[in-house]
Image (cartoon, rainbow, N blue to C red; front, side, top):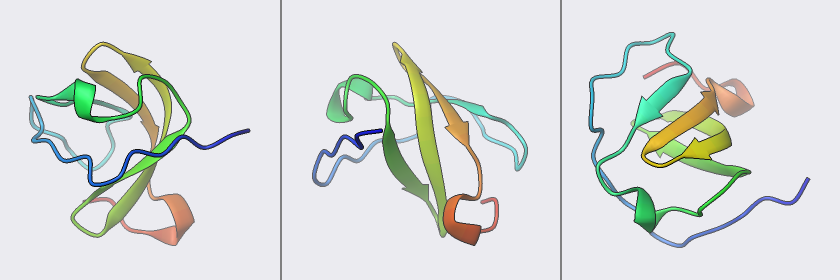
Length: 69
């Protein structure tokens, strides 16, 4: 698996996120890689993005032992 990178990609969430959701929506998806696999951080939580569909990212929560934000 090759991890894609994009330096300093920043966006806001387009919809609220709870601590168990595995899909999140971002306001500016073009700032991120256009496909998996990459990581993102919300507060102190790391997430692994396994799928991208427009502004919707499918994520694995709590990557590297981090707690859900």
